[in-house]
Length: 600
Image 1 (cartoon, helix red, strand yellow):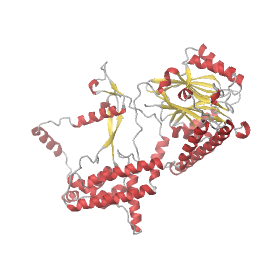
Image 2 (cartoon, helix red, strand yellow; image 1 turned 90 degrees about the vertical axis):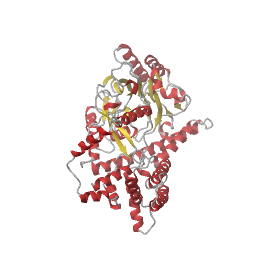
Image 3 (cartoon, helix red, strand yellow; image 1 turned 90 degrees about the horizontal axis):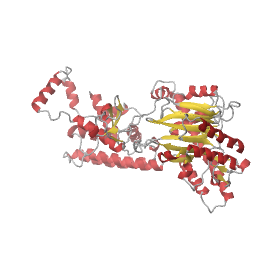
Image 4 (cartoon, rainbow, N blue to C red; image 1 turned 60 degrees about the vertical axis):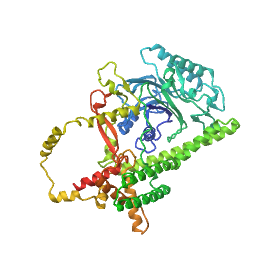
């Protein structure tokens, strides 16, 4: 279902206080929010004050909204903050309440269309008696202020655990803070979502330095959720991050009842596999076979409707796409592969009852440290790439400049559509569809129906009307232009069309971008200049396009199929008629039409 990621992390300060210094942690917070697509981040030990907050908003205010509570005595300690991702959530009509300065802050925000979520962000004291007093203060606040909404969620660094399993080595915490916390949770009807999901699993969010605390660990960072909302929460995670901190991040996805069912998204050919030797050799071999078969089919002069250049091309595209998908799952970046292995090893060590506890403590501490270093290294590489891109393109008017400077708005999700039998918006018995597959069917059927409007008009009325319309076209082609248009496309036409096709454009249904065809053409030129055999992608496209010009599109090849992106215009958003459709076609189709346009 459509969801919002809520995460909590103790960032242990801001790093270098200079907002322009690369070690300033908010560059990493911005990247963390973007890469994880976190709608809401709850930060502990944020160490923010008015000046620091102003600097952060100046740097990242286009895509992040930061709300904070500072410690009134020492802003360089404590502090709690909310970070709202404007790409994902609207910041209109938010409300906040500061309950304990620098320790507890309440946020009310619209997380789904028409549904507000109340989140309590906390950073609890470490000392047991102060910790107990903190929970008692929160309990008293909500008891004495009944008009203030009670939280649907509570997240942050609690500095206490409720059960011995949440500490390594296992031990119970003092009664005073645990009982005070339990009283608060009972009154607010909150439950520990991760522990309820994994009742016997051991995992931890905080590791003491081995030279200071012997490598002991605890799950003191938690997210609680209201009992009646637990069914709408999923994907509870504890994960390391690329920020220098001794805590791990906890996160969960929240949805709402009646939210639309969404799929995993459409597959797009990833750029990092273009240099893969196995994939390259497969494309060369499969492409050469297809080109030879297509050339034979074209030379025979007798065209088989069931087996021709177009069907050969469709089969070739399908095969290289399947191969690319397979290789993309194998060719994960080295850091990603190492992180997955370390996560698996850590989980295995912590939950293996045959390993002595003292060995578990040492092994878990070592694995956690390696995980943190790997995440930081991966994170830093991303930061370096981002800085290089900004240095090269940040001051030039272009796609990147526009993206970083435009005002961010949350992406709208098509949440429901009127069913065709109930297409009157004012109908009190109107029924809606929320399943994405069936919503897509409603949209497709609606636009197919539009294309057939007045198709049954009698020829004696239709034909004269067409003639009248055509007579209004005053510009005519010359005989020379007409002669040129009758000629089939040439290799030069296709090469120019591919050259003029822009990079970084959304591909069609098959997920293959222009960059793949451009890469294959570049390899062909390089290999042929070295007198080496190579697959000629332009030669194959030439045979394909000439076949289409001569015989039309072969049914079943999917050459002209597209996926439709509905853009909302106005009026009832549940009525598909109120959306403007944009069709994204496959890049091989667009190269063909671009080549034809060049001839015009």
